[in-house]
Amino acid sequence: MGEYIKDLVYDMINISEKKLEYLKEIYRFTNKQKRFIRLERIDDLLKQVKLRDSYMKKIDILNLTYYRNYKELKAALNVDSIEAIDSQQYIYITKLKELLNKMKLLLIDLKSIDNENWKNLSISTNEMRSRLKNVKQGKKIDDAYAGYRKQVTSIFMDKRK
Image (cartoon, rainbow, N blue to C red; front, side, top):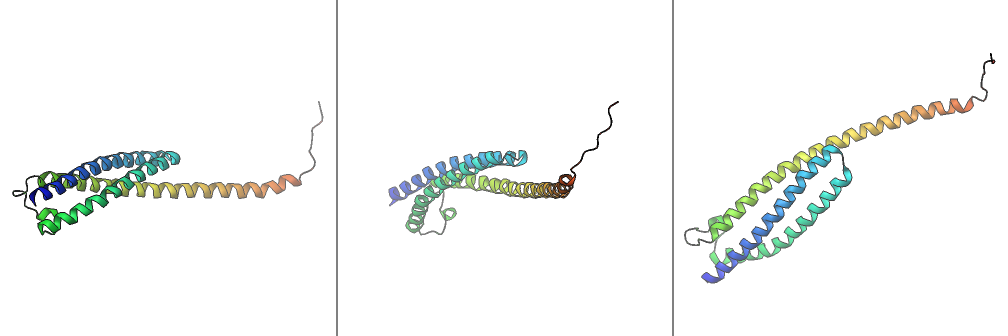
């Protein structure tokens, strides 16, 4: 039983290390998104969103295996969560707890940056709408005078001196 639990925990540690790497990449992409929103580089922003989504899908795949191992570990040790596992009795669980804590902190930072990006994107969108409104208004004015310009058929010319 002890070796089985140890194998489960080591698998969870390996998955968590991989997830942490992917989360760091997502963090990097999210910071780039902030810059692209500020510079209004929509194409670059969309590329970063696609890259970020691809890493999120990789994390989702890892989560399937992790969750299966997590359920088995909880059942084997008869606990409700990893925090409830005694680190003194299972020394190797400490590394897993540390990784989970690092991921938790990184996710909090990611959420903060994400919220800021959404706020900035909303502001940029509102600014873009007002610019488009001004362009439409200018076009209406131009169209109003365009009819008048078409009506004028003669041109007055001064005599040559």
